[in-house]
Length: 582
Image (tube, rainbow, N blue to C red; front, side, top):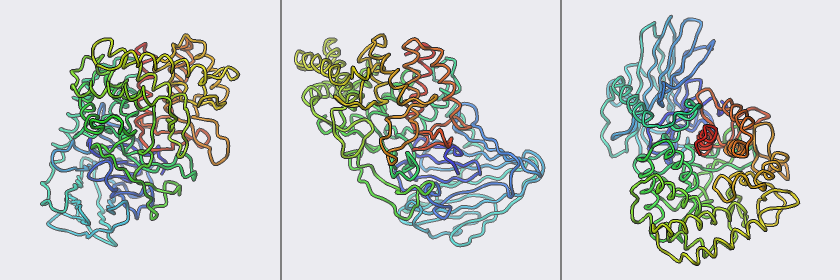
């Protein structure tokens, strides 16, 4: 299936991708970064999946989330009748569950269930079979999954099957629960109570949003997605629940996004705070302090959702990859990179929390002061850029801009008496760095900010420069940069990160930067154009409102990890800009 054919369900500790055909093809258990027990997304159905669907070819399939929730409803219209499949994950108490309820709306519909559990990313075939009446289990390594249903099951070749027929008004329930091998069998789940409680949780959470602008449906769905990607026990926010979905087919640029980037988490925090979600901000603050520790010099660009630092990267040769686009990678070696922009984004997140009048941990102010002082010492060094190209260190313009942002926010915090430090030195470095960026990071011949000092490469990250306040939108350099990017990197409503110099470097449009472009259009006085582009981008979302990282405009398909937090953050911010809320 194509990526856009998937929807997301989750329990704020892990998430599953459910296809239009009723198959769950991706699920890492017990949490986002665990090994997948359903990995058909990156291989074949033999690598694990869970299918519940009518037999035969549907006349029509429609999907939607229940209003303001993460409860998915897929309706299959068959020649003999209609059934609706309801999929959700209850917010976890002790164990993690996937609940699937299929109900016949009218007529008489034969259905099938096929459950293939394969631990360790689709490699390990577990011991399977009944343990008690109407109870089936699969066990291998440290995990066991239990299936509870009243349907009669049969086993064949390590797969559980069920065939059943529903008439109008009838329904069947299936519950899959993960426990560790040391745990006793979990208690049975009352599916109707679980459904009610899950719906109540999401309705209560979405009800806290203060967003009341024109784009309520799109913003609300993006907010729910961001909440689903937040690891509830710690407040860490993963970039996506998937790994190795390619940036471009067979280009080998496949990365593991099931970790917490400081950049993405900071952006997410600001989006949530902007519409009133303070609890998530406080949780992220504690995650940040726990992850970074007391020495800001050791700060990484990403961590595990519990603050793990060691994220070794390796490949899984038994998985062929999405659309045969190997390799499948686990872990992320980019965690070893040094990126100046991360300091600015963390400083911006802390500053945003302070402006929102959150009662910050005293350690956060200490971290802020240390961060500012550290940036003042290292801002002249080359570093890796925002796009994390391997083995490429330069004086990247956007990285320098974010270093300046860190210094500027630190100086202002010190002037307000919020932090202590060498304010005179910080001011001096801030001033010198601003002049340096304007001299070497802006090309007069190209009339644009450029990717790195004295280069002639245009880069979509330049769209963020005015959004963070390095120069005002009224500055002619901002307007000329937008015009230059429009000639080289903007095609229709889509923005590409950089112009490919060779076939191997080709990539799809980058959806976050496409929304940044909307903001730039609006803020430079081209509101009607920005609104038109935003409406086109909204139509790129799939039928349940989700976005990937990238979009292949020629093939009209999603690429990159999915759903992508940064894309949904950028959507929210573009909507707020159009509403006049920045």
